[in-house]
Image 1 (cartoon, rainbow, N blue to C red):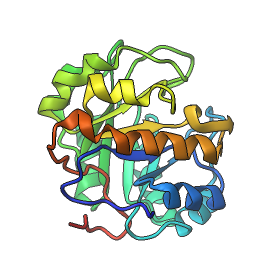
Image 2 (image 1 turned 90 degrees about the vertical axis):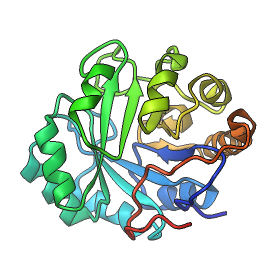
Image 3 (image 1 turned 60 degrees about the vertical axis):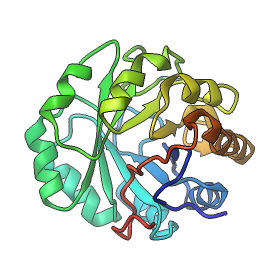
Image 4 (image 1 turned 135 degrees about the horizontal axis):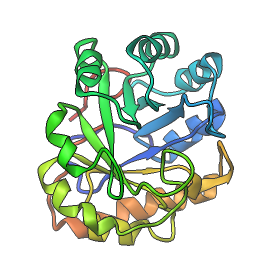
Length: 238
């Protein structure tokens, strides 16, 4: 099985975030990941330097999205990482402006904006942005991101009826089916829930999580889900 952005798929896409090793990234894709996330935030234990990120991206096929995760970074910094590392998307995980998102999109960069159920920016801020998708999680914990904390994923369900929803925060192979059942997202994002240590993934957990996501098709009652991740090759395949 290979990762691909396919049209008309009856279960959510999967983004495995916080990768630091190209071999592990390639194995995640082989197991079915649609997107790989690379963290460019020095306070994160999963932070990567450009050469490290470039090696990870080089291991990915054109059908998979390479997503850089940024927190309150400026346009020049983000574009430097996009160009040097070969990223296809930028995930804005702080309090970035809609103008920044628009500038990135004008450069051909896909954009995911993070929103927080218990913080800011929240659901109401979505109307200010024109982006490819919104990643939703809670705002508890010491760092931007899910901090491995489960929350009421169903609180995002109505939002997902109106906007492309990427569900994140506290997901694992053991609970992802429940999260999908109550949230019905277009995609899920997982990091610590499939790790052996920060930045290093447990392939057994990755396999079990992706299998559970694929099995969630029954939750969508035969409906198809529009993909949200923009692959390296730039074309979402039908």
